[in-house]
Image 1 (cartoon, helix red, strand yellow):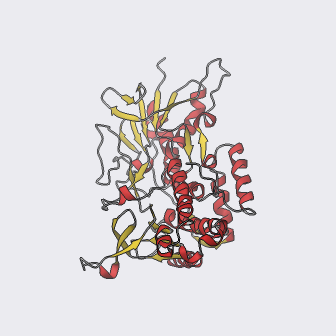
Image 2 (cartoon, rainbow, N blue to C red):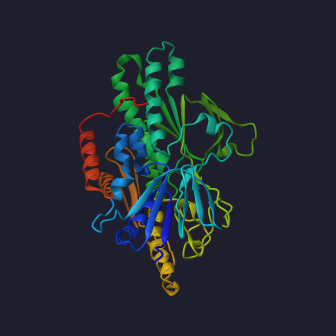
Length: 427
């Protein structure tokens, strides 16, 4: 019998959760499943800001794919989800062939979950002069650059030059921007500053958060937005809302406030020894023919998350089912994974009458604002403070697949309550 081969492109939330749903059938030999990913691990991106600021080790945010998908040998054959570490170069939908940098794979059913990448919105100098936070390398690079800034500034006697070198600018007023700004404040003022004694003073260091929207965290209730704003101010962060970035240089960020919009020459340059760009993302676009795309670059799917009869698309790559792009959130991808699993199997067995329509239902959102504080909306209930922070950590902890990884992270988090952050320079 010809066993259907399902190939999943992408090892993020959408791809991994779909593969987990299919795993049981793959271990029984009823289907073949292959997951293709650039790295050999699943990256828990919501915790990257903690890795970048020494709150967690880099290993804590990653879980090896071959440990998530262990083959079953009870049948005498290593059945289960096969893992291929590689980059997809092109997808030929006519021959149903995927070309990677290592080999070619033929599929019967394709699940696209290739994720997203940083969106610089065409801002001059932004890509060349900013750091990003999308992968482990980004997180480790950011931490090293922050440490380097303190090392270099500690031997500079000119106070004005020190202040320029230790000016940190975070671009983006969404969840990632707020979380990394808060963690950066704690790393800089509570760990690095005491470590450098009197060679660097508190007034030498500045952190600026830029948001183009009139408020931070626009998905939240105005009360929670104000709470988040006030908490960041308490952490000595200079928050500028309704401020657009005009350009980014090697040592500056050119900005324009909302009141100056329309006044073409009315811009201001603020010093930046390190600029972090977390202002938004866009779908990762692979070379695949025979699909229709939304103006945003996402692949257009029907209400069953199908781009065609045998191609399913979910996560940041997909429009979401009703033609309007769904939020680029992990919870969207995990909900879509359930639908994709059911619809792939219904298609394989010819049960088109059992295809499920995808409808996104938000379970709420939580955003941490440093140690002991978070804001969130859970089931319509607005929460903030220590309880929200505890809930945020608990929910994230149980998103990991193995107890080994959960205990590993819990141990690091517990130690972090009593000891300062790790400032070991890895890169």
